[in-house]
Length: 386
Ligand code: PMP
Image 1 (tube, rainbow, N blue to C red):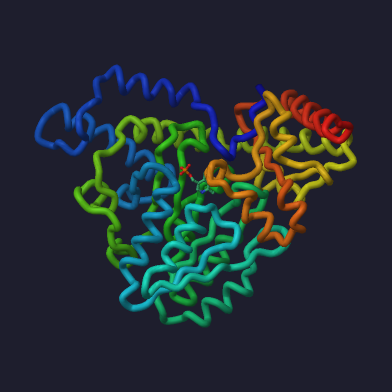
Image 2 (image 1 turned 90 degrees about the vertical axis):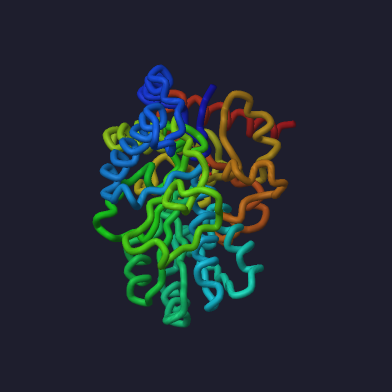
């Protein structure tokens, strides 16, 4: 097996598995909100310790951490919460053209509500948000409740958005800034005490932790000034995300965050190396191999490419044990022909249809990355010879 889909998900780290087993063996089955008896208190303590340790790693306050079922829910929660809070006054959501669907489609769904207008902010040819355009949008909307949702790093193309500049513009024109940090946190340390990010989202299954576990880090300032809870029926997570907490995932999530803080540098070096040899091998073996945008060391381990004239769906069916993808896994079963991300780059339609993504991490070695590239090049040749 050659696993080249780390932007899709990552294998559980041994240390995370151990944290899960330790928690199970310690009988942590109680409801963490059942504060009146010992079994509940034990689970509650585990959640509190996990929250403290995650907050410390991120330079945030424990009260700013909201546990959710994943980044998709966290992004929905923030956008819906903002729209519910402000739509009576008329509110505005600006979102990047290459956002993950959990922002992109949520913004489009919200535009159906009375009082909510949404605007797509374009990216340039290298997939980076156009700051001048954003600035113009913000000047037009100054004084009106506005949320800017732009991701830290993209999940399909190696593009990092200038989040520091976006944050500064938001402060200057009085807008809220929400950042989908799922791929950014994998590759870059974030420190909330610097006050760059308004709110920020992490997904633990991208950093060798459990699936179904998201972290929404709220920015400073009163919560009620930015969001109203879209859900009801419980006081968990400060009333913003009610429902019994997924204690096991939260404990495992804290373990994977603390491991990632120590391992990030080594992991990103490995990701860069794997992506480099993968691209070198394919460039040497196939004259049809093309990158949609150049490699970017700031976004290590992510390659977006196509083969001139080779049908991507056909190639994927011939790849056997080489695991790569066309784009985000989340749209995989959605019946969509191809991703909105290459479209936003302005690539010709025939290229958009054939774009592929390879993403690297601890689940693949440098040697396997070379081997995978050789197999892909060979399959391409075979398809064209048929
Ligand atoms: N945003 C980005 C940038 C992602 O890469 C992903 C995962 N594909 C998500 C959001 C959704 O994360 P989750 O799987 O935790 O819902």
